[in-house]
Amino acid sequence: GDPEPLKILLMSHEPARTLKDVKAVMGGCTLVEGDFFVEILGEGTCKGSTTEKLCASLGVPMSSVLAFGDGDNDVEFLSSAGLGVAMRNGVDRAKGAADRVSQFGNDEDGVARELDTLREEGLIPPL
Image (cartoon, rainbow, N blue to C red; front, side, top):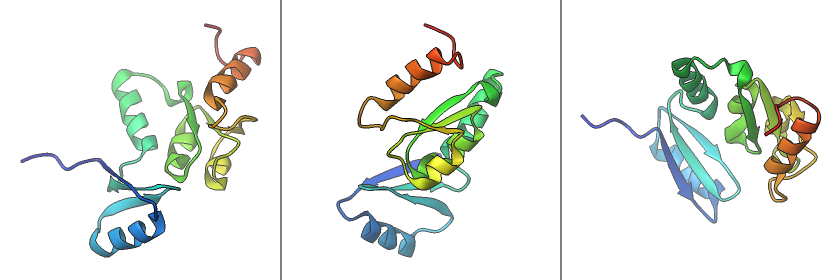
């Protein structure tokens, strides 16, 4: 048969209400609420475990992974990476899971600017 979807993303002006409605009809999945969306993830599916599987298949150690995130859906990803960086304007759970919190937000080219900072600090190689 057809494979089950790994992720369904519902955009919503009322994510709390959407989450409540989805919880009423869905079981056996992980639900993540954002500011304007609800993610429905297959059981055991998250950015962290998916990255671990991809790295294992490519022979890349997780210690070589650099992850950026700002939301609840990034917590496992940030904590499983060799270096997890939360954005300044990220949620507290993401900040707590990260190795460091950027001085920049995702709304001010934070990833690009943090990459420059990491290069300057010698934590990643120059381009």
